[in-house]
Image (cartoon, rainbow, N blue to C red; front, side):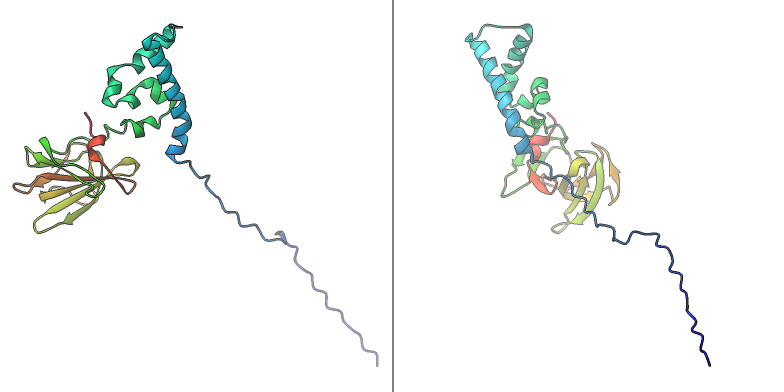
Length: 219
């Protein structure tokens, strides 16, 4: 008896994907240079301009063009003595980082209270500033979102506002508050009232790092 062998045919499905697995791509963001690294080359250029301006001012170099004379006039203006170098347009156009060195960051904040004197100046060891307020109403020094309303010591309340570019302001010595977490406030909007006989206390942080509020206040 002959046995007939039957062959089972199996049709292998056609692959629709590549045999090799897809590579895992890791997107790496190009590290941004620290502002000091970007400042140094430009600072050298600005320093050269300043030296030329001084030389022209003293007569060591005869005037060349009206443009050079304009630069000299701007560079030798009395405003330099007031720490306003970063506000000069020709300097700012050469290196924008001058604003971080010469005070152009000033102007981001307004005074939260009407005050005549500073009771406590900012320092690294005590990173806050306080004013002897003439009024009890405390207003927001910038536009932003209220990200926290806290209880301090005893009857004290604190309000924290987060603005643009990672700038955060914390206001203390409040007896009562008029805002809640999540509220959006504009510059000058009331946040609360001060405790009787207490100064207005404020702490400012830029990206989590404490900064002196005084240098950021509008003149």
